[in-house]
Length: 209
Length: 226
Image (cartoon, rainbow over all chains, first blue to last red; front, side, top):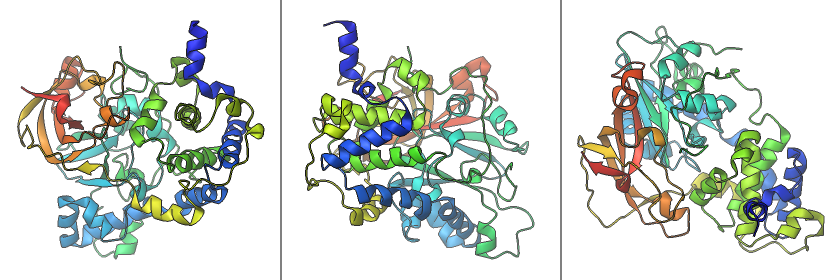
């Protein structure tokens, strides 16, 4: 068999249209005609990731951690069961570990091999998290990456990068910002951005527009 | 030689394009549809997450260079559908000519979707073996490393850490071994450890700051006592 023949055997996808919108339509057509997918299930999946999960879940967990010492201990000991007690669970969040930022350590999460990310807590990952640049650089020069993100570390902080190589998913608990002492749980959650729970921002600091 | 997907530590001078708060979860409508088709087809149970990652990783080098994130998902989905025997090559070439068949009993129905996504698929398992390593132990990541079941097969030990020495900082349950599961050779659960490596150990003289750290989750057979 020719090399071309071999490569075709591995690359069945080249039979589909190259243009992405046409390609997805072709896949849907095949899956539906062949009875492999319930067409109504496709819309339910999109609705789930657009509306039912997202960073507000993670922000609620962080705010609760800041004000409730018992919850904080439970979260650090076993984040999977602690968040399940708040009815948060699901795909790409089956095994969760929470890592706390402190004056000694700043945590940053990456997946150098693909794009592993705690979907039930943060929703689907943003484009930059999946980019080749972030995946290459985060483990090699995290301080330069953080500086580009506008994160000013304290001189006392070491950087600890978590490369998500297994099915364990990481959420960073950012430090509670100064001036937030009198705030309630809802007000605190509003200070917790998605990127602060990846370690790519600090809580209470606004992200670039 | 490292595979394309194994990006950690690769020389890269590109800035990371972080545009801030994205307005939409999906930048394009077809991104949402590509994700939905991939997850819905995955719910048939004809392959597992490790096989699905492997299908993305072993796309041709030129595909990786030119395809965007969700295009890679779609290419891998098409390949998985044919390899698993669910779809023929001629159906891929002419989707509108595929025979119309009633919905398969193994397809997820719309009403089941939220439950399936909320439940997830935990990978922790009983291994039946005592862990070989303990908290605080110094270990070395295997080098040269490859999938021990299949030449060129799937594995989750990044190139940049192979041969490096680190310390076990978390030791917990056994998990499904991706190297085996990706090739339908069974779950073969192994103990999973979080291993902390200093930047000095990983990058030597090139380290940005020597006492900064990278932690990776590594399966027992990826490690040896050091």
